[in-house]
Image (tube, rainbow, N blue to C red):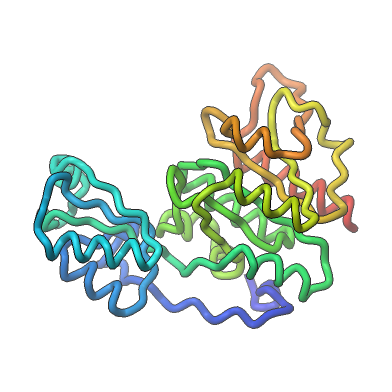
Length: 267
């Protein structure tokens, strides 16, 4: 990717380098000091796992600080922390750092406006496979989408695996996190964005979907597709024609197909 693919209208701040390869293979930080220093430096933390039942005030204070900084904090059995640990010295806390900082939904909409284009957004509904998320970021960047939105919980975050799978697209494609996808869809519709969900039994075929205007494409999870409330808040449920014996596509493949149908219609 070269620099001309960077969002053109607004000057997004450069994303600072995050961690050294020795420090993390998948953005994993172990121990209280490692998390404390990461928070102090302003590093973006995706998720923090703390030992269930640990009442240590220092640990609880650290967890609260991480939550205030936007991280998802999850209590887990200490045996899970032991299994996750590379150092075997996790001190009751393991954090997953984001490979890059997150943007806001407003950043994404403003980027579309600054480029004089109808918004084209990809929304991932509980997509847990980091390889799929990375591939979607790559397709979205190549298709000229304005941003990708993921939920804070039950989703892959911007881990090192996602960054690697995106083949560099994570450096150019704004990604926002929200607490509630159905609420997001309602807000986007109020702002004139049409919401297109992907579903095998959708009532609108891909080639009848009008993607020329402001559009958000919703991609469901690998196994279950979109959640019920998300599907109910879509304006259209779009099906991709399937001519073979297999009844569904990989989530990232489905995203790429819809994105490039939007590119075709907008050309």
